[in-house]
Length: 591
Image (cartoon, rainbow, N blue to C red):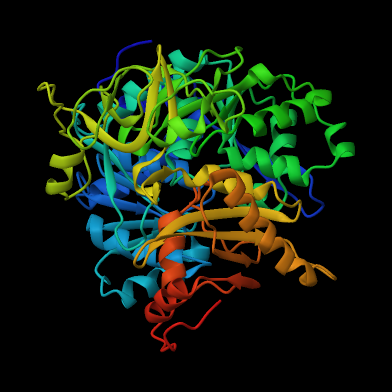
């Protein structure tokens, strides 16, 4: 592959070299629920990007931030490349429709990135204009790319770009009120694409695709841009098409011959729960070589159950590809060997609480960890976050990274960048990214154990919330998503928020289900679960990539903004919630 100084040069080369070749299949479900697609060729993509880039160049957009609010594959990809072709900085974001959370998130991104232009579509244009008026940013130019007559492709000129120029801002899916835009450079993007190709052994003949949103790092860098980097074909589906009916994802894998692509562990869980046996019998998943499982903790039991259930459709367990990555490192950090069953380790649960991976003793509780594979194009160090000392194999610490894929930092946050992107170990090794994730190396394999901010310290013990959530979800077939976290009064309290599917006759079971949850946590983890909220499906918040937002759930709980179907609260915790909600409750009012 010829060397390119920046991703714009590579994309332009692909558009001219492969003009008549299929670039993307834009898949959707018709009124009968059958899949259909539009095809976007490399030549058409390049022409559309040049026209839009010419419009931006006329307005002096070089280096300016351009917000992209589009869900249609054709429009989004043309807009994203149009920004790169113009030398502008693309800023993908979720559509500001539906939930208040999405509207607030977009408003905060507009402010944080000092956006100069917004590229959207006619259906959203009025909502976007209203949002700009509400936040006092009417000066931002807004263009509906599907209706407007944009610039002249012949007037476009290749921008003068350097490898370390910022290509796009990837806003992380954390707190709505504190958006952080990761500055991904052209060098970062090219390096990580190379790492993905070497790790997953993709070629121009690979079919890469999925349903993840384009403002998410796996959706953008993995599913959308990797086919372009390869010179192959991508197959993409709107997220809501998957959410409404997970079967359509697997039908897309079958009908369009996807070889590489995936999603979070939650996606495979949804397929297990919502796809019927007779539907599985109609699928052919034998061409799916690399079923990526990332973006949240990977569960061995999910992969085992999925492989067994979908074996009649030709799915092979060794197709599963657990990996680890994050936006701050563009996307991929570690991954395994394609075609090989992922390594797992059963470790002693008590030792894990003390941040050690040790074989389980006979009769003691165990935790099964799945390997996220080997470092790909980067250096991984496990470091004690308290003293910055490197830890040996088998010890759990913070995951630190170095390499060309690691981004320049967060947009306009110099203090955070100094702390997070320029960390130094105790022995003087500089230039590391602190990920905030906990993990351990075992040989050359990375095992992720959790997030530092999610660790629950209860009675002096370090508890991993995902372990509690996993155990609770097994209590009943009626249970869906779960969130566990700790709150503090004069001591630490465990809180479990558990979604339950209710229907006729189920309401009477809520008290017994709550009691079963408390018994499960007490028996398996030897801590009191005195605070259990059973809630409606959809209450537990997740990011667009499927990551559980435990911090947001904890704040909603303390603010009294969770509406339970049934709850049991310790009196001290009820007092905390009452204060947070601005209510006055007599001291000692019980649960």
